[in-house]
Length: 170
Image (cartoon, rainbow, N blue to C red):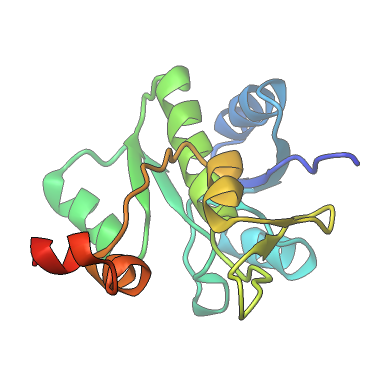
């Protein structure tokens, strides 16, 4: 089964910036959409739902993470960017490696959002191939999370509540 590349929509009013971003992103394994203004970005989003947008906000697409890529470096502008719904804010000129790291992080976070088919009895999750896996195994495979295991007090009581050694311990 082929894994889909994440689609990044880059929006910038400067064609040279778009050209640079397009090459940077495609060379890094992303599918790229481009727009020079908000109208072009909205038209793109109507036809293709990107995994991440480098610039805009819209209530209908607010579930898509937005990274502001701008020359504005003032703290007030940065705060306005986050207040407008941005998940990140990168100032120009930007470091390519840093921008790609931020994109990768937000794409991975987005991929963890959404619906997961879960068994209401045993709580296993069905993966993309149709196999049922324990929740911890599934999450470890799809993120950088590593689980440690223990037993909560309720389960400890349920498992061992009738054992003499447990009763003495309380």
